[in-house]
Image (cartoon, rainbow, N blue to C red; front, side, top):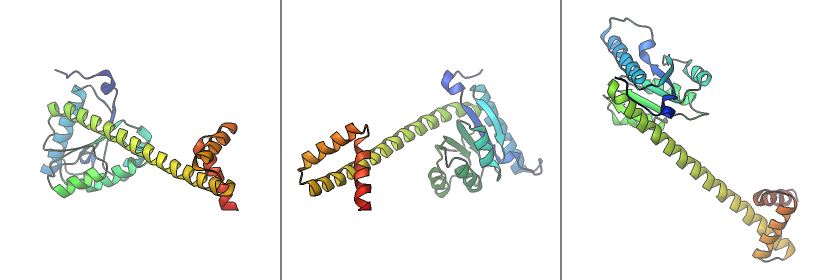
Length: 214
């Protein structure tokens, strides 16, 4: 019986990356196992109501295809060593980050560290059963959103610090050239910014640019 998901999660567009799509002898045990895993993954996604927009091989064309399809999430099924797959994934998500879920049998800590460093949101070992897929994806998506929120906050803090440094330098220039106190220099900057309908940091940067020219 299909599992119920929220409407927002049902709309997630997912690209599945699996080596089962690469050429090989279908009777080879390793490939047969990979095909079985791919089938279990597909069943789990469909039963949970997710939208599988494509199943792609882990080859050199992966970054281009991901760029064309613009999925909301990437699921990687790499039974063993996933380093080659991750290299393509890193390129594919370099300009626009997406949650990545990796199902594998590789329990080596080094492989896990490399995957997390590459941007994998969830590294799942021996967990590719249809009934486990939906909760795994929910956790991965929640973790990805939290990480993106923290990164955005960190970026905003860095931006504010950079602006503060520019404003402080501009105040120093005004204090030295016009014999103003720090408060007077700050008020002067505010007045200039308001008169020109500019942000305080923007007018401060202009003062620094003029100072550099002189």
